[in-house]
Length: 199
Image (cartoon, rainbow, N blue to C red; front, side, top):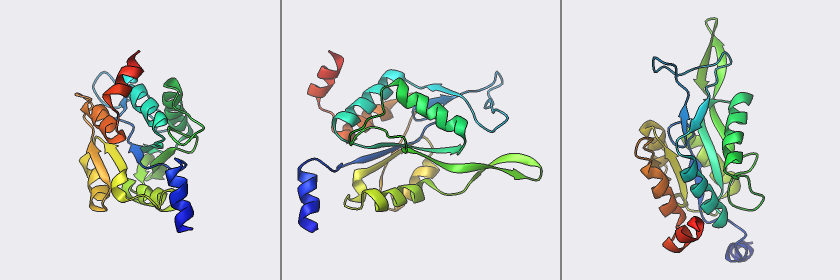
């Protein structure tokens, strides 16, 4: 079994890296009202637009080309409207891929649910991002070292527990968008690939 696992890896049948992307503040800009507050819908969901669609497209396409699986790991509640929103985001950059890299239909993870508390509908976190990563690592990519798995998030408190477990982390900056370039470096994008992408 040991030799067959490494034979598969040598043949390129197993990914060598995995990336978990937060949604809001990492690839998306959540909808806000005129006063700056989140524009929360009755079901607890929030609309969103791309932070930078072309940068997201580049990241996703490079991940597909290099056989790197992508996951959305969001603090949003597990609602159909949130699933639909993220699915649309992925589809808009041709991010669903039948091969090893890119997104799949089951590439969405949510750490919250909407529950009734004291007569009000509130968002409650039921797990942590670090726990989700640990679980996926164990179930799907147990052969990978922790440093080959990256979590990108714009909130440090989500990154810290994953970092403490030994996973690679990157703080997203929704203003400078530098994290897109850093993720490309993690993927291992070369100048040659960048030129090919732009032609």
